[in-house]
Amino acid sequence: MKQNIVVLSGAGISAESGLSTFRDSNGLWENHSIYEVATPEAWIANPELVQRFYNERRKQLLTVKPNAGHLALVELETLFNVDIITQNVDDLHEQAGSEKVLHLHGELKKVRSTVDPKLVHNLAGWELKMGDYCELGSQLRPHIVWFGEAVPNIMIAERITSEADILIIVGTSLNVYPAAGLCDVIKNTTKVYLVDPAKVKTTGVNNLETIKSTAVEGLPELIEKLMNKV
Image 1 (cartoon, rainbow, N blue to C red):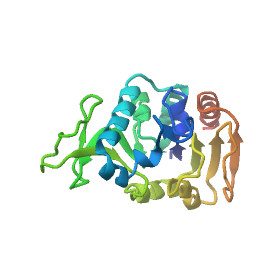
Image 2 (cartoon, rainbow, N blue to C red):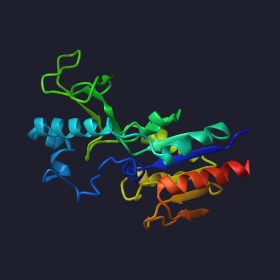
Image 3 (cartoon, rainbow, N blue to C red):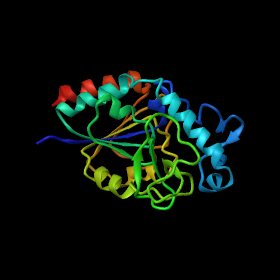
């Protein structure tokens, strides 16, 4: 029987493909705070600014490709049951070929109704405009979980993580909840691998092995090690 591997990925792995992150820019975008472009209040106050911010993110996403870290995770699927739980809103895991990807914070290439969050659509191209309406006649918004909003997929993520035999943490500081709390639901026997060159808060995580490398360097090394053990 194949072992279950769960991968918890964050902004670090996407940054290695060239996607900008707020950590890189001190939480600012064109001198705007993250709270001015990624909260429900921001959407109410200045929806045009919010739209422009996410349009720029989509445009940038079209210029980058999955890196060696993304591609290495796909190889695991030949010998393990692999679930990727990502805090990232890009689709680089999917582009690399990963079959099961759960997005905690939404998806950049999707949009949804402002009156019915269940009405979600793929966006053709990179631009969402004011005046683009859903079938109910309301403005479409980015399909993103903004600061202050509930994380709809967190219970699914907890169930998946609780069944993990191996947990791989890559590119995340483990400072953002509720995603950081996933470490609390793993089994006592779950082996945990942390791939990150920086110091990450892992208080209370047992059976932990740290690989102080970037995703591009560390994941291929780890994946090779795991596959040789099978």
